[in-house]
Each structure stands twice: as C-alpha cells, then as structure tokens.
Amino acid sequence: FGVTFFIIQPFVVAGYKTPTGSMEPTIMANTRYFALTSIYGGFFRYTQIKLPGFKKINRGAIVIFKFPGDEKVNYVKRVIGLPGEQVFIKGKTVYINGKALYEPYARFSNSVDVGSFDRNYGPVTIPQNHLFVMGDNRDNSYDSRYWGFVPVQNAFGTPLFTFWSFDNQRHQVRFREIFKIIH
Image (cartoon, rainbow, N blue to C red; front, side, top):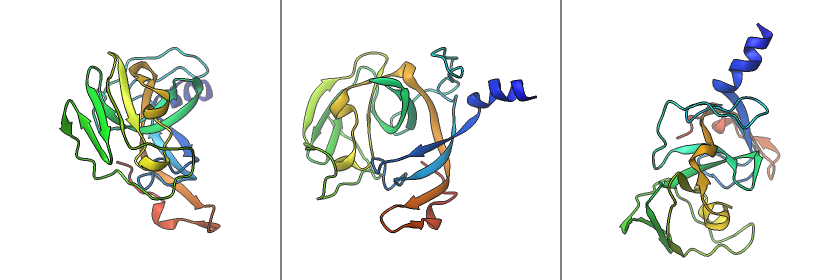
C-alpha cells in the first residue's frame, strides 16, 4: 500500500503553500491549499518525466507550474494569454488580440511591495506551446511581465480549496479563508 500511495499520490492531490500575496484576494499570502496535481499532466515524483493531462488549459484558469527559471520551484498564477495570442497591457487593462479582457479577479493597489511595476507592457506574441500568466494582485506579482512565458509542459495542477491561512501582520488565523474554494 505504501509504495502505491508514494507513486499515485502526486497524480491526485497534494498540499501547497502560497507564501506571497501575488494571488490576493483569490489566494491570500501564507495560505495552504489542496490542488489537483495532474489535471494538466502530472510529473513522476523527483523527476522531470510528465504524463499527459486530462484537461486543456483555458484562459482564466489558475495553474500550478514549475517555474521556468528553476523547475524545482512551483508557482501559482492565472492564465491570461494562450499560445499564438498577442498580449498588450495599458494601465489596468489587458488586451488579447486587440480586445479588452474582462478580469473581475484582478486587484490593483497604490502600495507596491517589490520593485517597480509598470502597468504598460507589450504588445508581445506568445510563442507556441507557452502561456502568459499573471498574479491577481497585479501591482504585487512577479509574473510573465518580468520573467517571460511559461512552457505549457511546465503546467501540471490547479488549486481546489484552502485548508489553512495565517495573517502574519495581525498574527492570527484567517478563519474566513479556511475551506474556501479557489477559482
């Protein structure tokens, strides 16, 4: 049973932590959540060997992926652009192939935690077999605007629901965030 669980578990569900606020308010900083780990194709544990997924990645999906600069690190972001599309950002509006994208999940702030976040970007065309991803907390997200495109091959999972959330500034549990469905 133990060997079977060790092999199968990474392909079903696993726990993850989001240490930063880049996906707020969808996923708060210091929140732990369960995720489907093979919906877009699971990796064999401790390898780069990937099995085929059973769902196509769509715009607006929240994906967990191996970071292109260090594939030992997993990131979670929202898919904004798909292969072959043109992305252009002006102010707070993202344009895909010239059409404004409706993004009710996007948040902006006046305070920026890290670096200089320019609200203008592109236009750029997303290469085949790549994605353009962004955090929902646009002014505090290190994402495709800064490190480029994510190979589709690197995407493997999607968050399901939170099981723990802690506010480090207030030193308290965020009870309203526990068992929250992530979408």
